[in-house]
Image (cartoon, rainbow over all chains, first blue to last red; front, side):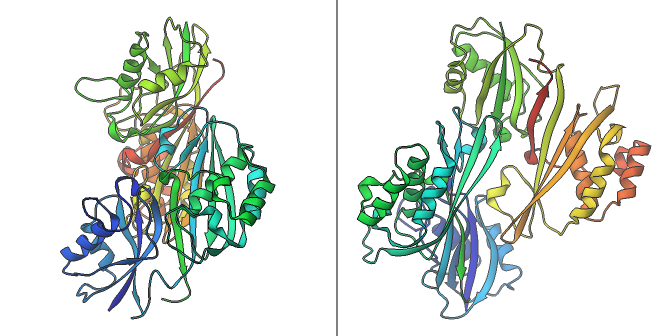
Length: 249
Length: 249
């Protein structure tokens, strides 16, 4: 029987999703919890999240002969998971449902806060920006990035993906003011993402906000597929996988 | 010379604001950082926050012969503070400014999230509620609590305060929906608060939301000054001191 789990985690203490030797990973914690319930299985996620990246809605499937009723299963799994990981939804899935290949749309959020001084309550899942930024310019540049493009320019080196065309459906920038500080949330929704793509998009938008790049520079970066001209890859801790959407389950 | 600092902290690892023997406190960390800058002083906060309570805008004053320019001072202090505490604003104050006695208004926020299952990304600063709650009823009960009252009914035992009349200017309840979960933020603004008052108000509103108390029960609790009839004191981790307002500095 195949199961579909939605998993939330604070990635701070993990070397990403994928199991590896000599490092603590989310996949390993989840499979260990399942094993303690008598379910020996290998889990497949919608995608690997990098070391330090968080998730509100990571989706995972696994096959198993599960004796526990579906309504009790998430509570049973959570009892064996550490505090910073939890199953937040548990469903039966079709035998050929695949959390990775059936994913039609993903939303990531990159969070930053703008303040001269550091703010402890933001530090866990935000990147700290010290100077002023121009949000209107960032929103204009975001519009340029939306749509179907060859996103080679926003891919970290070392990837073996050959087809680098993706569609970004929407980039939504939300802001909230606090005392002496404001928060910027960059929600990026697309049909798929290249390695480090959201963190490079966030870095490029930040450069636009800081005046290091113009909106037309971003147009040229996309047109010329020029990674070296784009912004830097922002740190993992600001990134959260918010939601994965499927047409079927 | 007197200085006024605005301090933000994640209270998780601290036994509250006030210095005490054999326990790590925010006041001690701050005074140790000041001492490392050659400023030996005693700090006074707008109020003591309890063990585990957070602050976005705690206000503190101290006297000191400070050689560092005002614009550099917060950076200098932060360099000696742990990651979960930071000065976010630094001002000169009048010689008779008092962070405690001059505070005219304070806003606290009590945060909770409602979900059958636990959500790791909320756990640090939210209280987890598992069943459904009726927000409309909570908002009606909040209106009953607003205003000038004898808040003896919402004071933890053991306090030595004699005048228990306070004014709650506003209770604002904000909600945000997430996948399989929603967040409730209860902002309470008043001219002052009794011991555990905000956590008891939050607990009482929660009981109303859960149907354990009615709106007219809350009216009676206030009228009869009956602590035993009010809701329980909710855990410290959901509470944040958001802002302290002064008429002068």
